[in-house]
Length: 208
Image (cartoon, rainbow, N blue to C red):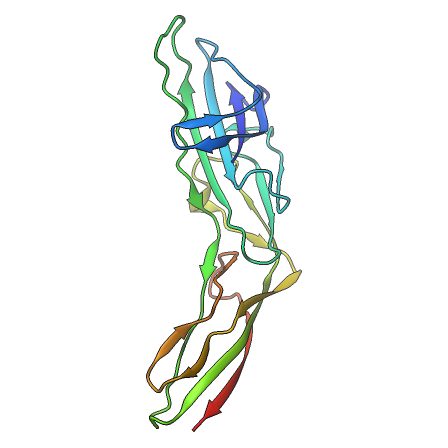
């Protein structure tokens, strides 16, 4: 994951998309920083690290040290998730402290996962169906302002006009009456309210 860090205020930036790697209990990064006693710190993080689909702007804007300003995301194939976390204020350990707690991020998903289930509703027990080539057209560009602490209660994704056709694959072959099957792939899209519309297409073959 990538980390942004600020000391005391947005202008006191100490991390600017610093990549953190490793596993639980053993994370490392290259740009070593040291706590300054008497100061207060704020951190934010995005996963996955170094994603070409993520762009962060105004990270050092006023009050942005509570978060990251504006996050823009681009959906390409619907396979990449986006997770976000922000922590602070954190008081620096006292001078000479021998035990220092690590910064703890709790990530939340910022996107929605979609999957399709197909059910053979024909009552004739001899009727079987194939469902193939499931596709969905979705908005491909969006941005959200996370500069304040409670961004999730006031800000939603602002979607652009560009779209992307996502491939969900095939769902079933010779599916029996009353049975259900999932499409092969799950895809990740922008969350939206009920006013957002989508185009879904698929092919159905009926055998009986």
